[in-house]
Image 1: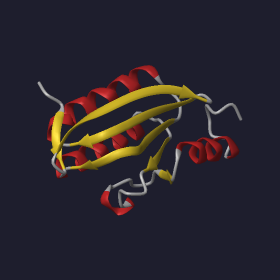
Image 2: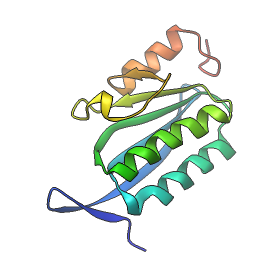
Image 3: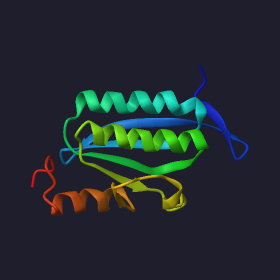
Length: 129
């Protein structure tokens, strides 16, 4: 099954990766989240829930956009992490209007460095503070 979709006349895939930074689980999302990518995003969240019990940061700064289904999937992903008992923060691409996504009570940051610094300064559990 293809995970690429049309976005502004280009074929774009959702790519996700995970890394531990300062004891924070960072989930990087890049590309486009459309209907074809919903299952991939759900799988990524399940993987993180199974392997990282601490603070999670959704880094959406490299997202190009999302469909209606993609918007719902991103909101659902954040809610699943919160429901699993994980403190969740997010970095949002300036090009994506913050109001376009239902981030709920998540703390939003403009970039990864700012988010990690804020977590460390707040003494968030799992950040070594």
